[in-house]
Length: 360
Ligand code: ATP
Picture (tube, helix red, strand yellow):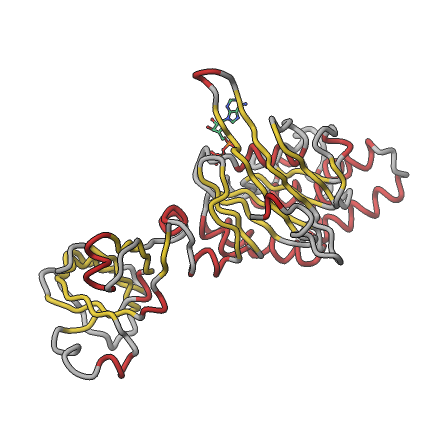
């Protein structure tokens, strides 16, 4: 919808930091042609932490490279603060990029790496030293200026790359899977730090990831990519709680699909619906026979048999084969006072209609 109303989506008071209008990118030609980006429209607000989320090959990096100016769109327009930059070279755009592999100069000290952009711009030495100091403080590495990149950990190197990208105070920072090379624990720690730094500096961040948990944790809004197109744009809660397509429901978290005869027999309507595993309660067969509608407000009841049980520490994951035909995943929190279920046990799955979403 926004595609045909380019001016309507930007409010009178705020020009979007980045506007993407009908952008396409075709690599190759004829039989070998790849539609890497296939008609994307987006508005990213000033100061927003915006994630491009999607599986490998869905076009996220190609879109990021077009915003940076490393790649020219086949069609469409890219605006930064309302100005058309589609054909400007990277150095004429007020954006900077942080790459997954850090791209630090190994022979230079940390301080020289961070100050490199200012040196190229011929900033006076005193100003350089001051701003390098500030940038290193922002990423909490004030004492590391004289080290070489090889003397730092992966997380520290990534923070140096961030400081180097922030020092010119770009309007927009583009981050291409910047945490991809870090182990899980460090990655989670850096997610929190990166978000805190973004809030502190107030710069628009556009962050590419294929990791849905990372996108949900950090973003103000997420665009979910599939085959070069955007399937849904929304807050993490929008995308997770109210997926608008079956692709989004399946890619962002785990989702159960109710379709065909299963949907008609359980819900009384035709269509394709989704329900998240943690929204389903598991009841014993006798629990449902009287008054459960009023007790828990669980207005759909689906009898079935437990197929598989997986203990995950805080949760247990059950697979339940419904009599109506589908196999649903259910997440049960291990509160310590629940009833343990075993394979072969008859149960009734109960869920509220408000947690079921209609998808395309
Ligand atoms: P990943 O998460 O793996 O980086 P992605 O979502 O960022 O994936 P892109 O790198 O944008 O995806 O690639 C989108 C499609 O375009 C892929 O099919 C890819 O093979 C293709 N592609 C990307 N760059 C080129 C290129 N220079 N020449 C030809 N095809 C390309």
